[in-house]
Image (cartoon, rainbow, N blue to C red; front, side, top):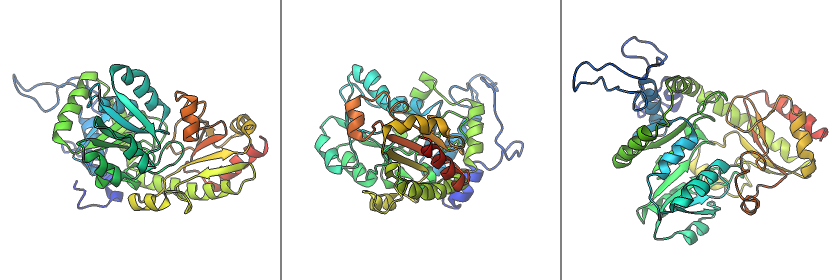
Length: 384
């Protein structure tokens, strides 16, 4: 299918290939095979070994490329697998500027496992463009940003970041997990790579791990494919099929997530036990205008400060409809305590600087009835 001929609503449903060209199956078959027969010596069907290329995974990769308006898509066994592949595009001595309040696992990967090999990282508030300029070095090869950021919902200017890093031959990598291609397309704004933890909104059902890189550079594609097949962190056929199935309802889910989040964020803002709510849909959000200029929606993520840290355990224990869990982006609403869960790997001083304290809660708003979600949180807060 061509992205120029169909709307996003149709593309998420039909994907890159609307039906299997051999059988006519409208659900892409699960090619659960590790190896493929060769017609003869020096001949191939295009599929040899599933770690390298698998038909189900290839369809998923093409679909993600289509949705993110890129030329190439690569599917990995997790978002961390995708990030690890990206870092290998650079070499010891290279410097990367990274959003300070991004997922804690990314910090652990960069700081604990790549920094000892000679890579260097500057962790800053990338919503402050002046700070990015201040931290830019001759050896800076990439800007690695999350926008909106996890969990403080800060928005970084993708266009300005792209212009800045491209002037010195570097690359802009944008983690687009929070908004998905339904609400934001970083490549259209100048980014070199869009990154996803497909486990979240793309899968949408809290049942599948996956990660994706989408880009349009031929040379980068050759390198990334070699990294992918050499390290072997590729997505399995069945998981690829689950992803394809999940993406079919991406548009419907994202619209409902956003609708619910807008209502719940406003309600939280007026709650007597809540000090502050972080949500990009508020007109007084510091980067509201910027967000509107580079996205088509606000998504389903909300973070908020409780007034009393002592209320945290009871809130999490007494939730019933909303589930106390670490992930996000699924149809079920999930409450997370970043300090002890997603951002535990980040040093205390850096966490506090970013705003991740002992009163911060993160809410991934699901597609349940919004009033039911509100009633559940309200009852849990009253018991806290």
